[in-house]
Length: 112
Image 1 (cartoon, helix red, strand yellow):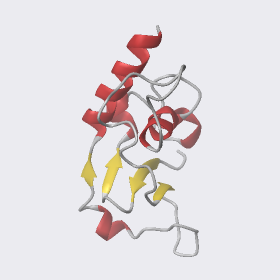
Image 2: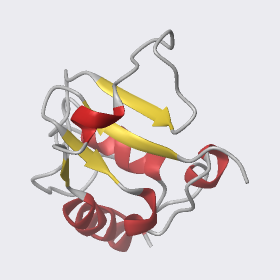
Image 3: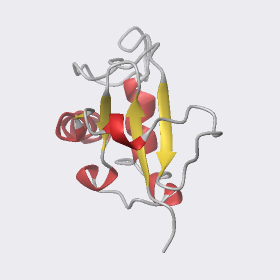
Image 4: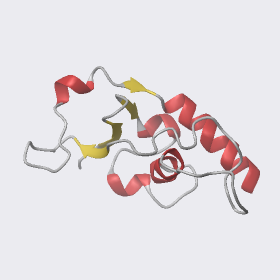
């Protein structure tokens, strides 16, 4: 079966559900392609987009998580894992997957 991972912003209480942006749930299913969870994370934590050649096109989500506490956590996580977040409080996290999908479409439509 395998372990399923999601991306959480502990500072803003937001999360991304990988399936909502076209990814599988296993860690390695979320890396290595344009519309990946890893691409989304890199864009969300970008601190200075739009100031030089090769930057992403403008989008309000780019840089939204810059400086925040972020964790990629699988469902087999235990309390002794660094960055562990308890399952119960995570139900209050806002799912921003739709906005992230829009960001990825904007960025990768421009580069295709």
